[in-house]
Image (cartoon, rainbow, N blue to C red; front, side, top):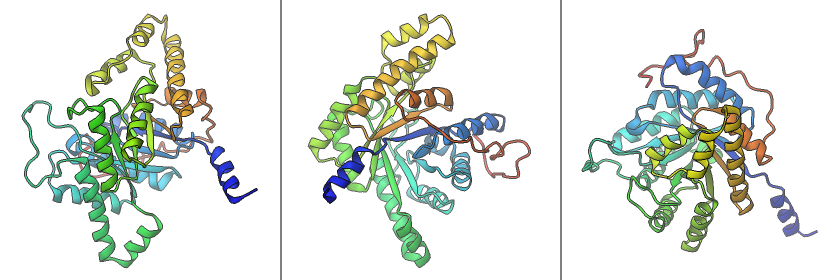
Length: 335
């Protein structure tokens, strides 16, 4: 067997990646439930967990604390969301340094949503106006820190900074972009230094596969991870449509609403989501990124459905930050 055959055989056995998105608890009372969910998701042995960061940095302190606790208490790679809308370069640079000081080595670089009540809003002069500029700034801050310290440079060489970006297979309503424009923007993000991309949620496999085909034809080479939302709650689907502009499949919503009880609704939604996830995996998606909305059961059932489940002992994260009796605290506002 040649080296090429050995490599090919190893690639054929490679397990698709699995990852989850978590949102920091909004207040101390929500912390126990949040850390229970995090524990159960960590037990599924994901490749990473991304932690959201509210628009304009509304969850800055909580996000940093959650990421720091995951770094210290679990073997799972945390990816810190980072937004830049409405923030100056100095402010964003400070946030980046705070995360790096916490031990974060992976970021999801996002523009963030502009103020909803300001339709004519434009980025201020001197602000970081786009995710592309944010990718540039992340690389710049890391380079400055490495240049200032040989120890930091050595640690950076051992654990390189990884930058993920978002991409929108059917266009981005908030940015007013089409699919073709999103392909172009993804190529620009790649040129700026992005290492991989995660798609916004979608409900038809062709949204993902057609986008990837167009992106590859345009010269995008970075991995494009499929973002999946479990379709188990009609109310959630309606809300996500309001937030993202991605229309929920009407036949699925109707079937969920007609289901006799929660168990039947959950089973129906998981079946539909498993079919979607399996189709994109069969088409070559490198993995699945599950938008959990801090609900673990649907996420885990989805993984079981595509034969990517199989967790280990649930770790004890119950004494995480903000939980009564915990010795870990954080300063600053808890959103």
